Image (spheres, rainbow, N blue to C red):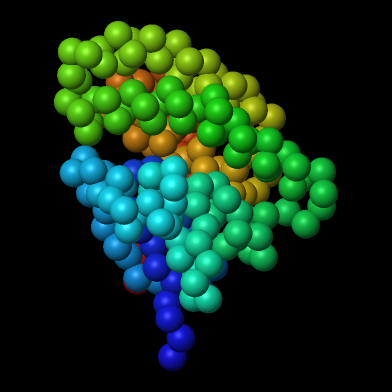
Length: 200
C-alpha cells in the first residue's frame, strides 16, 4: 500500500473545505493533518519547507510532490470529473470565476469572517473590517447577476467554480453579510448542497 495523500489544513477554513470536497469528489483517500494557524504553526520551519508562503491548505501527493493554493488543488483533483467542462471556452469561464473568487470575493468575505470569527474583532482590525464590507457586497451582487442567467455560476451545471465560491459564501453571515438580501444566492446555495460530497 502506497503513501496516502496528506492534507495540511484548518477545518474551519473555507479554502480547506474546498480541498476536502475535491478529494471526496475524486474518490481520493487522504490523511488529514490539522494545523493551528492561530498558534503560528504555519510559520514553523517544517511547515515552511512545504509552503514558503506559510498558508493552508497544502496537499502532499503520494509521490511526495506538494501542491498549494486551494483553487489549484481543487482543479488538480477535479479536472477529470464532471465538475470541470471539456470544452475550452467553458473551462475558461470556470477559471474566470475561480480567479474572481480569489481576487474579488475571498479578500472581502473571507477576511471579514477571519477578523470576526478567528480574531474576535480586535480594535486594531476594526477599520479594516468596516472597509471590506462594500467589496463583499459588490462580489455578492456580481454573483447574483450571473445567477439570473443560469442555475449555477458558470452555466447550467455544477462546476468547480461553484465549489470555490460556495465555500465562503455559505458562511458569509459569519463575516457580517446578511444573505437574506440575496434570495437568488440562497437558492443557489441550496442547489449546490446536494452536489457536495459528504463524509463517509
